[in-house]
Length: 179
Image (cartoon, rainbow, N blue to C red):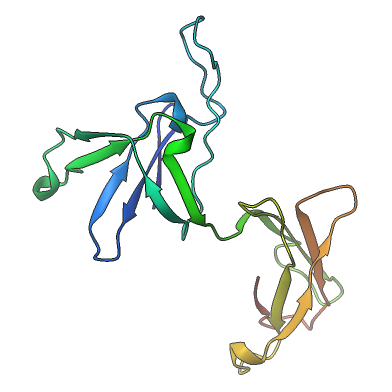
């Protein structure tokens, strides 16, 4: 889970195959987000460049400085030990799922004479999104695996914004959908 906190800082938890977890914290510039600026004018890098991981990201390895968090250790709502990467190369991502952001439906509550426009931004760790589809149904008893699946269209002039219009339905119709 990604844990944002004050000052545009972020930490996140990782777990191994046995369920052992560890917090990855941002004590160094390597994990400062782009909105974070250094105070040292002599620093070779003045802005953070870290993008928090998408839930489901698999790291082959993470390295850095191991530190004991003094907030009560693991038995008293503390984190116990944390790892603090200090270089971008300390994050070895094996796999990352696509990141879906800026999801909107307009109008939020359509009338029977309005299509519902669904838009979102989708990016992928490797820089390419192969395809985007929406599965939807206006039949409230239909099983999810039988939803209509339709490709979403890349919005002209963008590299990561997709759109689909769910056709107008009778007032009171429950429309279910997922990406």
